[in-house]
Length: 251
Image 1: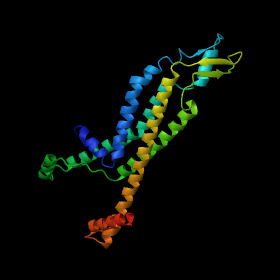
Image 2 (image 1 turned 120 degrees about the horizontal axis):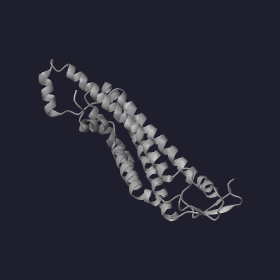
Image 3 (image 1 turned 90 degrees about the horizontal axis):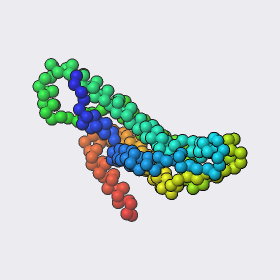
Image 4 (image 1 turned 120 degrees about the vertical axis):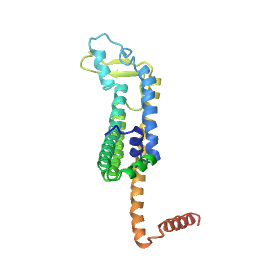
């Protein structure tokens, strides 16, 4: 069995995705990864060396830095990207396994319907994924929502909404209360707010996508009920329902 074409994998993975889900890819990789690599890393490269305190007491400056910034912002955001991307990678892995399994089954019946397979290979039909795949996609979206919320709360709890110019510190390694100063506080605050906004946008898009998936599933059940009453007029039923709803909104 040959390798699965990348286009088929993407086509199958997006079968249950919405427009919001496709935008999420751009939000996550373009805004987060690109900005993190090109800009944020340059801003935070001097975070510990330029964290200066008005004391020469050995170990005091390191203790104050650890208290003010328990985790580096850059490392925190890298960990956030990895964790938020993990559900999607698991989903793509399951889709890949499903495609390989379906392809293996079709190759087993190749001799029985060789002519049909030749026609299918020319038309290149869309890969249809059923069974556990839709449920796994919903679990993927729910997992991303929970992870986005967890990292948003964690970032706010650890750092707040910005970087202050001066931090006061009273640690065991310091004899008295000392004052410590951070370089580029305004620039770092801008990046922190930007990353928080990106997290909120990603969270909002995931929530919208989850609502759409549940609405789509509910409509599918309604269609099945309509088919039992109007087996030949399902399209007419929905058209009439939308027209009545549209008229009610203007009356």
